[in-house]
Image (cartoon, rainbow, N blue to C red; front, side, top):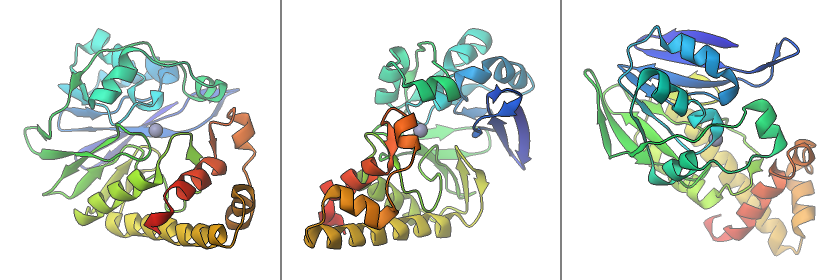
Length: 268
Ligand SMILES: [Zn+2]
């Protein structure tokens, strides 16, 4: 399933695979002034290929190493001969995609290997000038694009929501907080999020997210000081684990968040 949503000069392409006729999980990528920012997951490649025929695009940027973002790089290279730019760590994953857990194969699909070029610190298009920001946390290679005149922040999976209380394995709260502070300082007006599309009052929403995690970190620190185990902290601070932790073969859950907070208690 694919929807094209226009936000003035920015176009959002919102996609989901369908299963038994119903969408499974939507995520979004964007086109602005000839720039394609992310490419959608492999399961929707046929629809993405058809949709992109309607646009003039001269290059693609990939925000990070997840298959729902770089999954159609090979398609856009084969079909449209577009160059792809990304962080060097993203390029390594794209060139040799690792095996995926079953849930990721089901929701997004396995991406074919693809080649790209290392991104610089600025992207110029005919009408805009984007700063390339390294914004790790969700993954170590994550980048965001900021347009200072428009105060747009294309933020991949940096935001996702204000009260995110579960992590994928490997997410790092110290890097997340570093990246949040970095983008808050820029005072963005609009976020273009890989999960939620266009988000207004961007700086306020990012601060809400920062405050939620700082308060949660304080609670976890107090519980730890009082002698609670990681399992007790998980139960008392977040109400216990989510069933998806087991469905995801232990790849995504609250436990990963609590573990990352416990490794970084000095931040709270
Ligand atoms: Zn991601």
